[in-house]
Length: 401
Picture 1 (cartoon, one colour):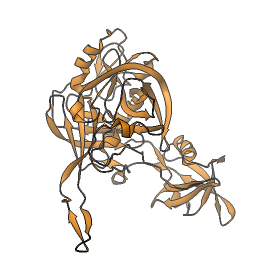
Picture 2 (tube, rainbow, N blue to C red; picture 1 turned 45 degrees about the vertical axis):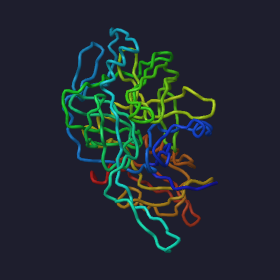
Picture 3 (cartoon, helix red, strand yellow; picture 1 turned 135 degrees about the vertical axis):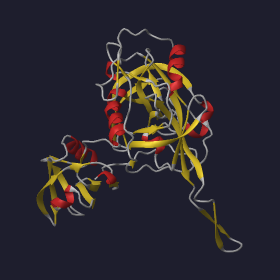
Picture 4 (cartoon, rainbow, N blue to C red; picture 1 turned 180 degrees about the vertical axis):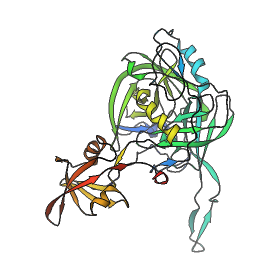
């Protein structure tokens, strides 16, 4: 069986054209069935790795709709529909939510490139490393009038600079408040007030067959603010992309590269999902997925107030998978695993008495516990079975440790 390094913050595979995106149906349609994240990568290949953290800006006033139709500030209970709200047409939804949808441009410094001149036998370098170029674009949703914006983490991955473009065309340089690779969510902040904030609805009340309207920037800023409509095809759809599990809303509203981070809206004009993933296969249409707001809101709140998602457990190892178990590839310095005596080369065969052969199985056991609790790993070392009790630490950015 093929082995590969597994980390507790595994990376998501993106759809990555090597140069500025130009739609070519003949090129992109005949691909194998796969899930890809619906961002537009316009130059270079963007790797996804680790945490993205900057000092959080304390949230001021983020309004959410409650069942009684009143609003409450940031820190309120999960958002709920106003059941008495009138149903809107797609045209009315577009007018209401359109101003809350923005473009998000990922810029990075160009790495010096070299080429070989066969006539001189020398290598030459070109492109300045100080030059910022657009390497990807996606969408975002304004969630507060004072400039907080939610998008997908993969949209802003490894960005040196992030530009936000309002539907008016006005551009801002955004601050990255916090990003979470596991949930594929990120929060940005621009220095502006009086913005039109979207209302976050309660996705737990969404039913199959409900109207679903997607608003975003498919294929880049040239098609900014595109509106597509369909229905909710399924709720609580479980999907795994690169060993990372998601609980998603499925829709047949058209979602394409560039829609990532954009809004999926119900018939009341409330955002019920954040568009993220699409199925791609020859002959397959109308299978898109969005992160449900019920799942997203606690993460968004943590990112706004802490800069990371708190309360997650960490063992502190990377492993490679095999039919026999999980071989420890590396042990993080200062981690619970290192303190407990886990060593590189140990073969983990059980966790809390349960056989584990994949990183996902180990994650499931770890994720059921809180930081400060213990997980017992059964390992084979020098041909002998050894049980090692590991104290779980909180998984957070290194500059917050």
